[in-house]
Length: 232
Image (cartoon, rainbow, N blue to C red; front, top):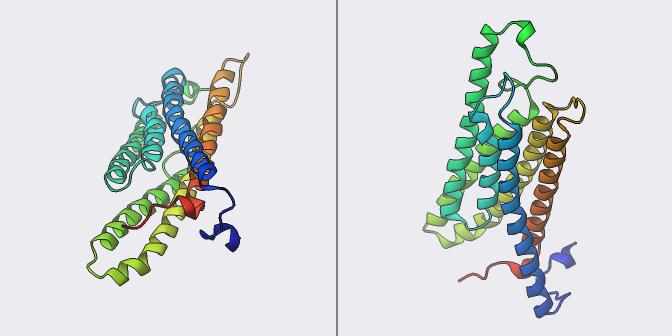
């Protein structure tokens, strides 16, 4: 493993390495853009029905998907935008939970829609993990600012590997959180009647596949030391 990650070893010629980098980068950006489009279509076509559905919740998957994609295009400014969009996504789902609580107090058992009901507040592991991931993301963002603005060069050099490792951990937490979220969203319509909801499940599975392709391409881009940005 150490030999594979050694930047002095050149398994591929520079030309092929550059081509592979461009291919993986194109896959990551293309799959990321398609994720945003599919998330928007998913919520527009299937996210506006049912007693438990609030309008704000339809923005949650779209905003969270956009936050994941934009976070890999650039760094400081885009991470700031990603945190803002992520907070909007968290606000949308929190507003939905509040609407569900209010509807529960006025809805009789006969008015409850047929099929699985959504998890309220912090009952689901997706919500727990999502809250922890957002917290770690913000801490990583603050830590990056502190490291970058520190006057001591030696301190920055020592802290940078830990900052990079933490970034990979946060990205892994994002992957797990998103997979749970996709499954949870699709499970709300898990009972199919005469193939009425099959289209939504197919769309969610395609979205999940694109998400995993996006994540794998990003991980491959990160693992090759030859593709790291040269220090100025």
